Length: 450
Image (cartoon, rainbow, N blue to C red; front, side, top):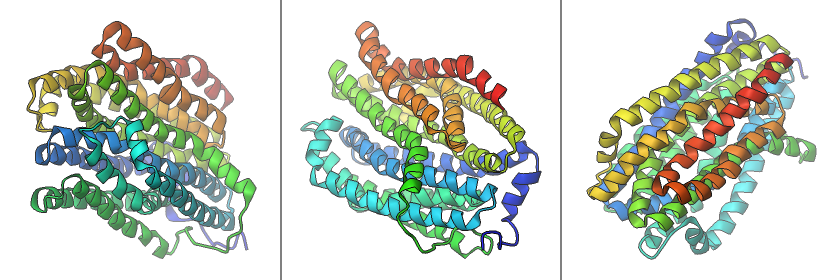
């Protein structure tokens, strides 16, 4: 029976009673730590590839990165949508419905991954050219891309399950899975690139194997007594599938936007600067992934809280959560900006860049590009807020503006006037426009509404 569950999980009980700021940091600190470690892990990937194989390989892996974004976007589409509905159902006390949502989402992500990855694998070379590969980089791009597509199901399962584990009151387990995966990836990268000499194939295999171990760690949630993650008899509920897809669509768009961002920057750099520009951007993109995942961590932390409070009709606690998240995003963005401004030279050196031209491009680029972090976190807070309360349309509009419409416009216009400096400024200008618009037009409405 629906209310037969004698009590909520301990963390769900705490959400209903303890101060918002305490709940926020119970989710945020382990999530941020896990995301930061994953980010460091990605940067170390770049360091290994750059030092162990060379600048061409580094640029090639960067060109292939959008296929990783495609894979992750599938998991986010279904995981975030399903996780949001799961938390709302838990907040309402509908535990059997929550189990059904989890089951349906798992099957959905499996089918979607197989279809998309299969079609992509059959058209790999065309996709690689579209992503910006050329004769110098093509072989490396295909090596890396092919392995990710073959084992894509491991990546989507791990990503989707981590979202459900956090929504099920297990942020620490999600963090442990990221820690284990990240540490293994570092060791495997060194072994496969430097010892086995597998080049970019080694980097790709390291990612897949480490992700598989992380997935195994996450599966421990099934054995916890108070876990709500249980598989039940499933039927294809079309209306529920539509809700999952609608609520997860902003996260899907956001991840696809990462691919658009990489492709757009690669094409702009290739056109205005050439191969040196691609190599310089690859350095910045590795660093950007580090910062980007930190802001995703803020969104991942507030989504379970806001969804639960929304289901439990605790409107004032939603308002407090937004305020805490805003302040955290601003402080984190300022911290990243200072790191980029003061440490640009050192950040470039750790990637083993030997060319003076690439070093000059990347160093000046970091100082301009990192301005965007002053605004990015705010945009994620509001995008996540609308997702978490089940209103996908405003979240989609925010995502389209920051990840597609304004960004593409800036990449087309700014380089025309400011050359390579315009390319670096495209993202900061985009994030600033969106954040200012949210503060002026959206924030007052939300707080009056609450």
